[in-house]
Length: 140
Image (cartoon, one colour):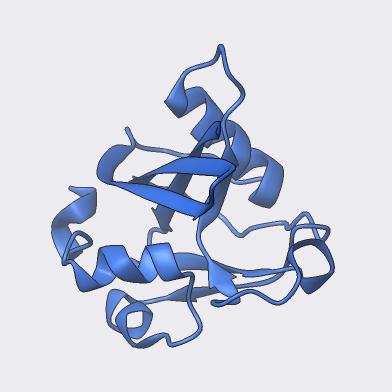
């Protein structure tokens, strides 16, 4: 079985809004949950936080301005050949994203309340919301 590790982050801006990215159907196909948070697979040999910062920079050209806080670890086992461990953080940022359009085609900033009502969100991000792991004070 192939083991992979991924890092994701709920990024909050200075207005208290959280960044969502719309996945490129060309790259990812039709997935359940078109909207997702920033992140991707780690490069072995570098730290989780270095990978998280790299993914944020690559996908949005934003910089993380706080110390990322881990809020969840999830197993993704889509088949007998692959196991992904997904680590999700919260962090602060400033500015507006400049997207890598090969990965994500749109972005939007939403409140935590709007995020909790988003029906077309990534399954694993939605699970963290449903479990109550993302709260107003998560970034403090």
